[in-house]
Amino acid sequence: MKFFKTLFLVGGTAVAGYFGLKLYKIVSNITRLHKSLPEFLNNVYGEKPTLHINHNLKTATIKVGFTQAILDKHNDIETTVREYIDDFYPELAKSTIFIEIFEKSEMPEEENEDNISEEDSAKE
Image (tube, rainbow, N blue to C red; front, side, top):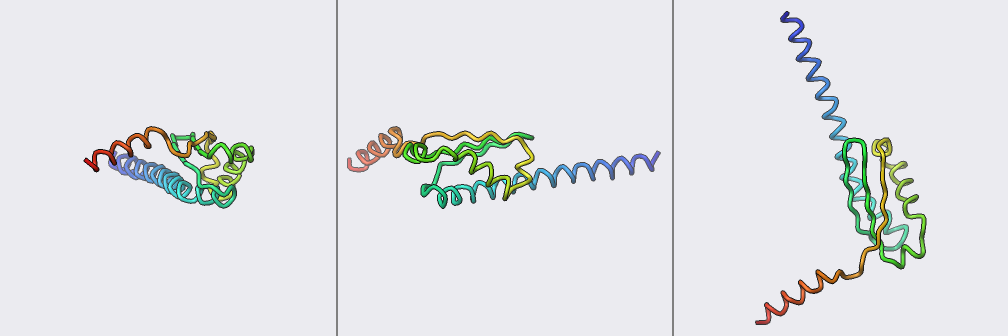
């Protein structure tokens, strides 16, 4: 009986360690992707994008935002991002990846209004 308890404990620890290592690799790849992808896209398209990455167990959602001028010029942004992930992050490429391209505004009105109200209150 003691042998089976020890075997179960060692097996459980090994399985937990395996999944922990796998999770660590995914999280570290996402962190590195979040740092390197904007620089890569800046080199390719000449503008640094807004980037949001969300990863669930087997699904990654990557939202990339460019200004309308870049979106009008280039219609291959999704393909470029997918190829970059396939080439440099094969662990992430194994999971399902949804890539959304959206338009980012030059200066959001909400932030502009907040900055004006803060400046007015500072003057008073």
